Length: 209
Image (cartoon, rainbow, N blue to C red; front, side):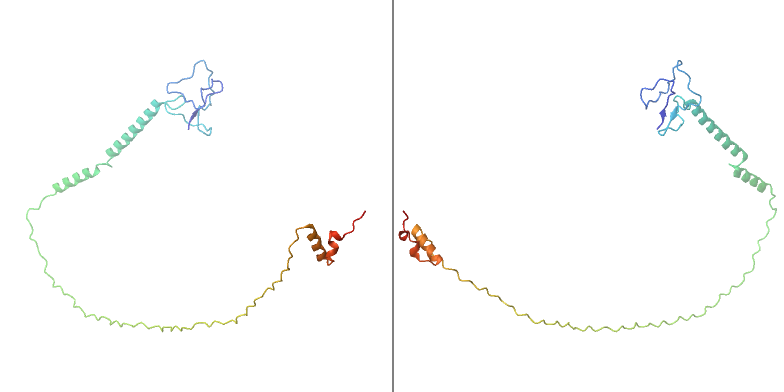
């Protein structure tokens, strides 16, 4: 993409991508641009030729004049080649040949036509051709393999005896019903200790003064 770059002594354009119109010209009061200043650059900053008809670019009149000159030169080249004879030269040659043929004198008397004698043609005799006999060779039969149905014998492993373990159930201890009263609790306590139940009777205890 081409971009217009103004010299540092000129006012800055309204935006970076500003392009001057076709009829735009710098103000005469502005200082002159340097001689080697490049007004048009590409996207990478390299100097390029400006658009046709824009400021600091090729003029449209010059472009049209150059194109017209090229067309005129091509027309002159084609006309010169045709004048030399590269185009249409065969017609002149054929006209000259016709004039030469017409200038040759025609024979006054027609000469008799002599036919050459016919030479007998001998056709070569055909020699009988013997066709070679083809012997058909029967294909050799391949021996077929007999499949033997042999099943592999499986080894029978001896079965191990299953041992069953029986759990011995321990007899549960008989639980004596718990006494509910205080006397019964004391009596049961003496029985569990192996003492005389009378010792745990509160009535038999001596009262201390």
